[in-house]
Image (cartoon, rainbow, N blue to C red; front, side, top):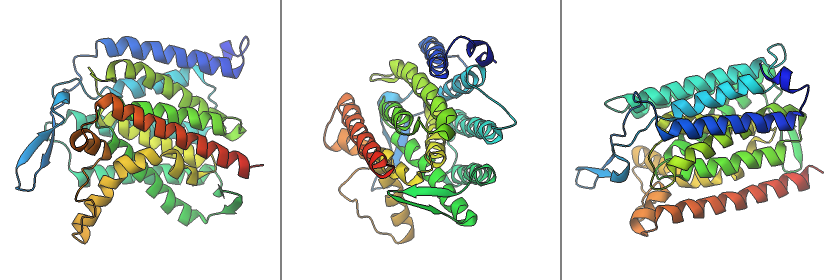
Amino acid sequence: MFYDMLSKHFSDKIIVLIASAVAFFITFILMAKPFGFLPRDGGKFVTDKDGNRVEVNKASSGKVTGVGLLLVIIWIVSAVLFLPLHWATQKDYVIYLVLAFIMMLTGYLDDCAKAPWGELVKGLLDFVLALAAALVFVKFNDTNVSFFKWNFNIPVWLYVILAVALIWGSINVTNCSDGVDGLCGTVTVIELFAFSVIFGKDNYMTSYTALGTVMAFVLVGYLAYNWNPSTVLMGDAGSRTIGFFLALLAMKSGHPFAFLLLSLVFIIDGGLGLVKLTLLRTIHVNPFKNIRLPLHDHMRKNKNWSIPKIVIFFALCQIIMSVITGVIIHVFSR
């Protein structure tokens, strides 16, 4: 809406910065006193070796959670108001925003539920939304991908399968990593800026890197209140939407395999827990007996690292992986 007016006086890059600044300030103001209807964190529980239900991460219990509802709404509204949007040529862009909103709602409803939704229900919802996004992608985009110096086309049916796995995996590893103050938000901000720097010059990615930049600024406003000791938590409403969008960025870049490097921090931290759970339930093998998962819990509980130390360590790892990815893409794209 405001894009047509602003474009007469400013370049697209300046307009993206204006949108980002507006989104940041609105987020910063709203996070100071979140709306009263937002749920409170009910605590995180695990079952010990004796079958007893034990509460972990007690510090989060009772805090305002589900603020991902506000974060995603601010992000989407800011994008619609300030970024260029042409339905005739950006149908998939609009549909992705709708799917992201639905993803947020599923997470928010889980945050509000008195009894958390079961893994099967959440897994099925993730699968349906991942499948919808994958089908939309192949409808409006080709399935040519780059891997190092090789460029090749993936059959549509195979791309859909791989895309569903990518999106579903990204949603869940990101969600699993949202376990200590500031971790998920900080790592995501770095990764979003990495996508913008590495792929922002590609014309077909401009709209999406702009969208990612706005999300990054929203998360910075949120981190002002989520850094340890936090007062607000994004909940599944935020972390699941972030995972969905990161996977989408990787697909739109034409370098979906870059996700494995750019999101390696999330994959190691949250993904190992999913691997452990899968192995235990399928072949009853636990290769991580001496490691508490997610990995940030191992550092906090077993290694006695402070939460700021954990976040800074993972942030530095994310910066390193972002630089490595950028160098690889630059070298093999020449």
